[in-house]
Length: 380
Image 1: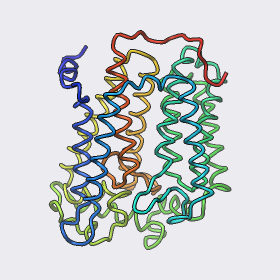
Image 2: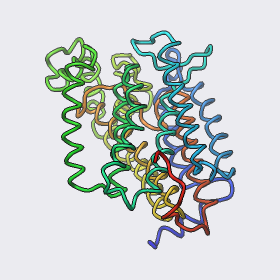
Image 3: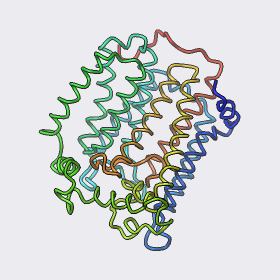
Image 4: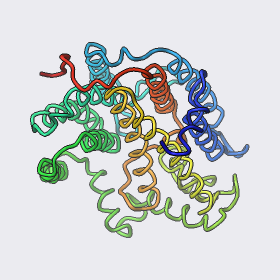
């Protein structure tokens, strides 16, 4: 046990694990500060503050409640079925918003079922791998777990939402890697991935999605069209220099040269106002959160708890890496949020709910034995 682990354990109280909650709160408040207009136009910060209050309530409720029922196969499959059904319903019952059928709207409240689907996928993979990680060398288990993932990912892709489709694939691949997939099977998956990418390019991607990829490879090819967002984001990040322009003085964001600066490009808006030093501190806060999740996974009482916590870590890390990569011009624009910071209610509630489940499993799992073998199977 490292010297810092006893300190972390002392901070984990009956009202929640503060080593998880404090970084998440700090990131949420930084996000609200970045999206605030300081009286210069309509700000999303007040609404985001309300969502933060709701999310905190969800976290505290789940952290105190015994959620070990999530390990039951019936619960896992019900959650997966509900998520898949909602993804189908959003495709057939909603009108397209900005070209995508991705949201249920009830007046001023919008809900993105893809957020619930991410949690459902993590629960399902945690259940599946916790029973089969010893036999994961059997390629059949890779196919079955991949089929579950593909079922949700294809529904997301049809919306179309390339960013979340990539997140689903990263979660699956990451959880397969930590479960001990063989190098031979990993190489085979790489070949399958190349074939799938080729099929998507010629038959699955929308014209604007292909244009974004082309503009990523050659940013100057369409600087006023498909490459505009990426170009403005790089200007915002670069203009922050060492110490930034100051809170509220980001010209790219506050003057709306940078589109969607409160959601898809909030990292660029933050970098413009806080500079390189602020970015380092921000990434350090994310690092603390990720390290704590890794520690909890390592100390988990059961395989399910460990895989679920690692799934949450992969979810947050994938969103963060892809969002930052897009904002600094290392990845094509796909419209991906960054955990806790980006404006939006459904993803914020999901993120705090995931932390609440991790906290609950860690608390109620103490003293339990690791479930290496079981007669309960999922999917044959």
